[in-house]
Picture 1 (cartoon, helix red, strand yellow):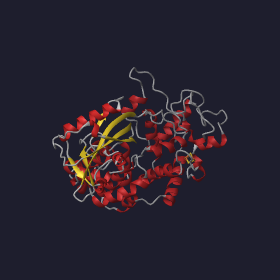
Picture 2 (tube, helix red, strand yellow):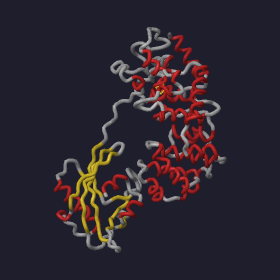
Picture 3 (cartoon, protein in one colour):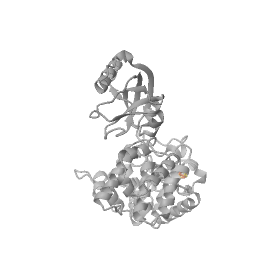
Picture 4 (cartoon, helix red, strand yellow):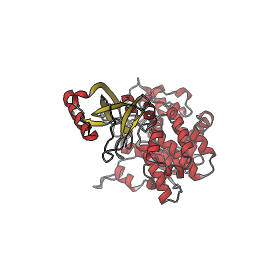
Length: 450
Ligand code: SF4
């Protein structure tokens, strides 16, 4: 069996796998104390057969040509003759698509590209403008980093985008391995794979990978597989096809295996249809124990889950619980309608540079009376007005879930008769009507508060 494994690994190399970089060798190769390197995963987790690889590429690309969704960034990538503009168009889409659904992104993308069709235009925008357009898309640091990177391309790289995945990752802040691979393969035709959530799901199912798919060792193997599989003549289309398959067919909960263009290559489906194969472990199943890519012995294949046995992830860390007191200061505007005071958050950290109602993080376990007092103190120091704790009206609570924070806003209101201006040294502030509030760079959480 070991000979067969070695042959399988050799087959993968022949099919185009990059040499293992030193960093990987130290993680999965020989231990620092010189212990023997762990064996590569058994053959059935790999793509070892060049004939099968070719067949899979062909089936996937034919399906993609017929079924792909018509998306604005795909049109731009296919029609834009200028390589820098093409790379920029793909880059913007990839950043927006991180953590956000395609259907939501389309409108944001079109508005963004209309406003800043080139890197040069984006580099000249203010953070305020970027945040305003990004409002509602979430994870605001993405827009900020995109703009910072555009400025860097203009100032340090003479406006020319790096031309390989390696340089994109090395030279552009906020561009990780996935984004670099996507830009390089789609915009420049570099034969490099990509691994995102959709690709992880497809690969894990194709090859029955049930080890924790968020672990560095498994992620490394998935990158190797993606690099081995990517079509050499149409890498951008191939990568998009893998992601499209994960987004539309090989979906998390109820995959449409019957319609899948690569079902004949899918080991999870085979296992679902035919059960655990007879004991020929070297070609069909790892057998018990020791495999770095099989499900752990403590959590084996569950036949009621079928192909959705894969992928598997370690349990997610619980989000941090936080409470914030927020005060909606309101006055009559010159046209008789209400106006609200908003202040700008610091330029780094969570929701950097966005506007919000004056807010104050609360210590855990504070009683309502005490909350009110600390908020009144804070407003007094901020506005110079004699704000009394008893004048603050408790309105209720709004819960907003950030990726890593379970945030509760405790909302108070305070009607004011006169004008209030905050010390600009403390924080920029302004009065806005409801309409202006919605047009400002405010977070979704603050819209809920209003
Ligand atoms: Fe995913 Fe099913 Fe296709 Fe396998 S056959 S890749 S599980 S959709």
